Length: 307
Ligand code: ADP
Image (cartoon, rainbow, N blue to C red; front, top):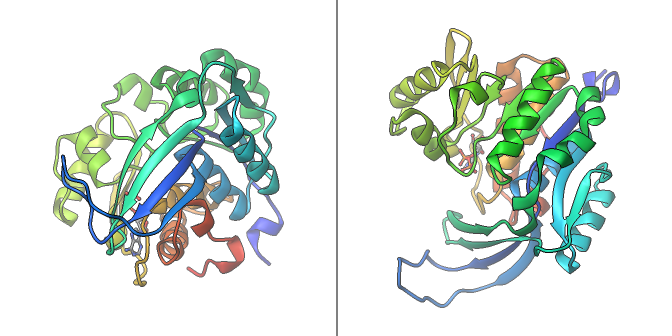
């Protein structure tokens, strides 16, 4: 019998809601250059939303704390979250800002570059977190990223910590973070760029990933998982270090791979699996996502993930 049929974990995701506007092209433009792209499509996105949907599809009971603008993009996103069985009671509306958007370019290798205009996500406040305190209290895990104000994320982490909840942080987009904030984090999940920002060490291979994980750990976090794209993830769990390879798949579009990884990792960990098992599950879920186009549309369901 699957563990999930016994315990459906409760995960609170705090983060952004955006609409992704994606253009596929043969290559990414260099600064100052205009190139002709191919297909254009519009998809709901935002790291917070993507991770909330990933956690829900992968088996958790999810409450998403976020902020939308008073516009069609926001309303459309809300409908999608409801259809994904996500609790939307704590998605607040900012009457003065537009909903967030992300402009995404994807090249023929599936590599991407992204600009986010956060809009209403920028006004997710400490008061909003206070309104959702009871949900944080009921949660097994609180999962956050950095597309909403840092002070809000820091505040939510301190509250979650007071309640004895595990805080999982995906420090994206890359930022420098205070040690006092990081001491409230159970596991941090940076990609290569974010790991370099946090550690000052350029992550190119296993050896540099090891040094970066050690340096990040010295900031007061026990567990560090550096995601390494097609190479998998480098894991520091307390004093143990392991490289966990990715699944070999045909890469179509890597947009949102990290979000699937974070959602999957959080679900599996909150089901009571070990950190290494959670990373293996996350690698398997994210590998499925890169074989499909889009962010939310590429997120797999639990039944599809084979570790
Ligand atoms: P981000 O999307 O945040 O930049 P990564 O590129 O490190 O993060 O990817 C996150 C995870 O997605 C990886 O750790 C891996 O599990 C999976 N992944 C990404 N790219 C590939 C790929 N080409 N093949 C298989 N798995 C991949």
